[in-house]
Image: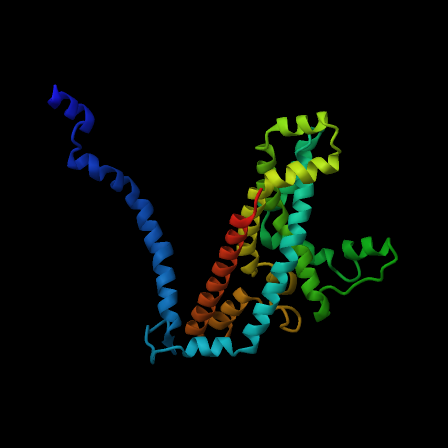
Length: 305
């Protein structure tokens, strides 16, 4: 009786094949992670400590902090960090406010809502270059639709693309529009997971639409909001692609250096290419994003929903 109970408790012994089989299925995925994720990360970190590194010959003059010292004292890198931080702190709050309002409207059970959802999500399935070129025509000083709309309110045409002082605002407008679809999708999924009984109870108690929005919708949507903010912060810190269709580079006077463009500039534009400096800048950017993400996670844990 004791033996039967013991066999029943322990279960049949697993063979070596059964123990190895799950790892065999995971092997292709693990191989991809090691080759395309872990190895590049380790390689970039090591490269950042190699002085005068030559990518073609794999030679370098020695190990040290020379690349980090150069990058941290480079005025272009200071400008890149300033532009990147300013871009993030403008894009995130504006896009979040707009996305919450639009997601809330799209979540309403109104006729034709599917058409509006499709219209808002179209930028996600459109070529970034094609959309950027379209926005370049829209920002045109003479025939652009944006200046035409401003003219309806008596505002003089703004030279968005040829005057350096206006380049950053054009980049922000395009960036907000580009980030809205993904943000709206996540927030809309969060709204659809809220139990309708909360709204029914609030309406029975006579709560207004505004009070329902701020007392029920926002608190219950807070976990999704924090998640979206974390993802969008990482995404906006890596702003790079938007510069080329709009300005064919970092603005008309090289005034729009961003952190990622600085990395690109070091290993692609400079002659000879400075791979070590680019790697050092990439590591610094990674550390900044990591710290910002940890701060957001800490604030989320301290927030009571």
